[in-house]
Picture 1 (cartoon, each protein chain N blue to C red):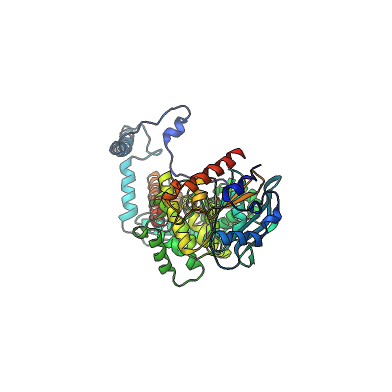
Picture 2: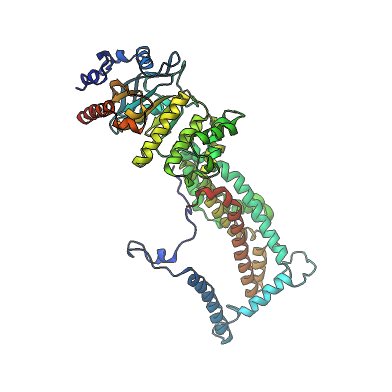
Amino acid sequence: MVLRQVGGKTGFDLADVLAPSAIVPGPRRRLSRSRQVAIGVLFPLLVVAAWTILSASGAIPEQRLPPPVDVVRSARDFVVAPSRPPVPGVVPFRGAAGEHARASIGRWAEGYAIGLGVGLPLGLSLGLSKWISPALDPLFQAYRAVPITAWLPIALVWFGLGEGAARFLVFVGAVSPIVVATADSTSRVPRQLVDTARMLGTRQRDLARRVYLPAALPGIVTGLRLGLTLGWTSVIVAELTGTTRGLGAMMFSAREVSRLDQIIVGMAAFAIIGLVGDLLLRAVTRPLVRWADA
Amino acid sequence: MTEPTAPTVTGEPAGRTTSGDPLDATPGAGAATAGGAATAGRAGPALSATGVAKSYGSLAVLADVHLSVAAGEVVAVLGPSGCGKSTLLRVLAGLEPPDRGRVEVGAEVVRGPSPDRPMVVQGATLFPWLSLRANLEWGPRALGNPRAGAVADELLAATGLNGYADLLPRQLSGGMRQRAAIAQVLANQPPLLLLDEPFGSLDAQTRLRMQEWLIGLLAERRTATVLVTHDVEEALLIGHRLVRLSHRPASVLDEITLDLPSPKGRATLADPRFVELKATVLAQVLDA
């Protein structure tokens, strides 16, 4: 199997990046869990406090970065203020959080569903076949090297402005990690398991579903999570394609009138929804892969 | 080299030794002698392999292996590490085609894996995402046997694992897993069982318990078995007949009928006949 695994383990330790383990001998000293949590809460608060003070003192000009209190006020407007009647061609902000979030999440879900439908079977056949993999691998490596944004022009030509292009871009972002992780973990399924299934009378055509898929599932789930995250980042690119609804559309409209507070609210919404999506996916898949927990 | 020793060990005629002469090990002859000595089993050999050869590229692994197993007979195949024992078993199981020669199980020529001749290897081959019960039911279900649940119950009792049915394989001990792996393939009632160092990864005490369990199980079910091992004691304890393989590329050096008093178990280890056989076979192995 030539495909490289993406992700493997999600999340990384900053210390691993700053200090390669070859230089630091022995195990790293760790803080207790409660201290880690305390620092994790305190430090961001400290950053916000510094941001407040620097804004108030005029060290940070408002047109560069509005004070935190403005951002919070905008967030409240975005979420709870009564919405106004829609005006064609205008991207609403007040009270429009639900509307934009629904639009973005809808594109995300549809693009991701197509990515799943294509990525899982393609990854399985890549991992199972000794012919398909060498044939598709060079194309696939090239495809992975093209950033999502570079797909935008061709998406616009193929699908025009709007929903079609948006779904396509989310699909492009989500499908690649799903294919790679599925192909990689399928090709690593121990031969012993497959042999045992065959010697127990399992038919050849049932092996993919009954042996390869469940055995590869822990690795596949890693790809599903990465694909979900990449699909979500593609949403904002997708919402450049002339949509008037969606968090990305709201942020670009805010940029045109230099409302940085609204842009920051949009970024926060992206972070929160992305995180919740990942938590949901983990909750759904955990019972399926619990057997592989260390 | 070791040829003359076999008759003195077994007290059998020299014709039993098949080293160097493939004709001595034609399936009919092998089955007749083995069947007579070990089990008065059903007619016809459970397995007959003739002139099996296998190479991987330029590496010749099996030169010319002749092996015959009577119904219900347990044949222990002993050979030095890396001599091709495992390859031989994979060929017998139908997982690898032989380059030359022929393997027949029952009346059928082996062309692929089948539930009639399952193989169990060292380290468990249970499906890690399924409970013990679901693992035991896999075989009967795959064959559309409606009694899968009942079969699993019987096997849980036979392995002494009744209380563990709902656990995952990784929650079982090594010995339990190995028993379960053997039980898993026995669920389909195969006439022939192929075992590749099944207890190699277990500690000595657990291994002896497993060996006693296996001896009882095979006797009760009258399952013909080929047991591949490098452990002389294990070969003598479990086998009705011992087949010694040469260094790679493997061929059969000689065969010994193991005329030890039944039922075999831990007491057998102190039996004078066992001690004598063990010394002789060990000497042969070490001199080879």
